[in-house]
Image (cartoon, rainbow, N blue to C red; front, side, top):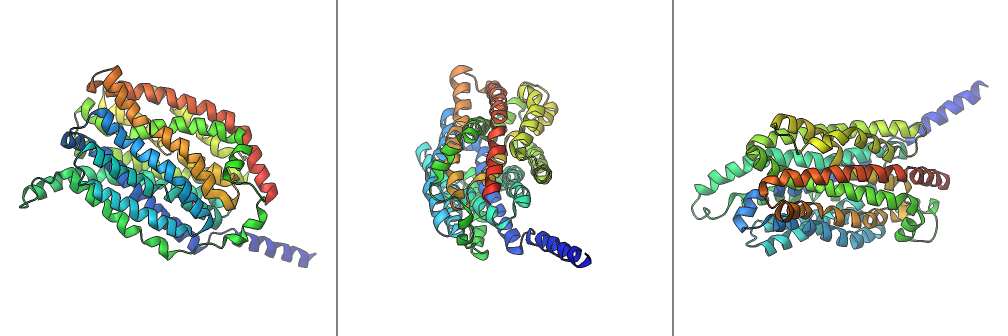
Length: 446
């Protein structure tokens, strides 16, 4: 009896140790997280300097919205498919390396844009480069972390956009002021506008961090394939699980419209409505983003705890709880006249709505077969990114053509947020039974 108990305890300890992520897993997470931060610095910086770009290139709100939305979103979606196929068949770290260097170079080259069309082209290539990161990174994390730790790992990875926002909001205003002073005092550079210098500076971290994927290991995926169902590709899998993915697609598309609109237009809204400069509101938005990043890790740990206790649909269920709690703030945030109240309400709305893709990412990695994980995520992301990219020009179009007054940007944002959030909530509640069934089916296969 004693020998049996001792053997059993030793087996349990060995199983526990086997479930602990390796150093290489944590280092991989650190590298892809750092790249995610760099990618979103680029994406948020352009929103911070949008008024200067608009003035410098003589753009309308609609043209600016096209750069902030579809230029990035459409290219991101289109090129995500071939790059995810490469990631599922060849080295994911090399795909990440290629993408990081591409979006860094494109950001720097956008600094020399002389018209709407050249800026649009530059941001198309930013989208191409960034489309390589998430599918490859999430596929790597799903293989290197045990399922009981995967939500936490993806939550940490998903902090990247928030910390990128923190860096952009904290540094953009200071960078513009510094660049203005520096360029004004440098012979021959007086005509080089400060917003152009900010784009060049934003590209530098990406160029440096972009080389780090060479420092972690590429898993041998042959070890994972025998446990996966044979036959069928990513598209077939998505069709088979349509009861889960259709409502997820509709819900997160609505939320991406909301999130991309907030990213792109909130800095301009604050300037127009409350007459604050980036150097004044940037640190506040940074604090909001930092709080959002830290809560993502806590929420990841909490969802792992619920998942380990049998709530298999927790990744969508938990997010639906957050949306319910946020609904009142979503309705009021862009209609209040007091700037302090606005920042309080926006802190609630932004923390919940902008990082929505993190919840979809975990759900997909939980149910997708290992051999097609990157492709499943990329195909699922196509309509998300394309439809989400319509948010910024939609807000610009409402402001230009419906309300016909730049001062009513808040009305456009209020209308958008108060419709997309309830739509997402309804769709995710419909998706809950499909997620539970798909997770249980995956556990039976493995």
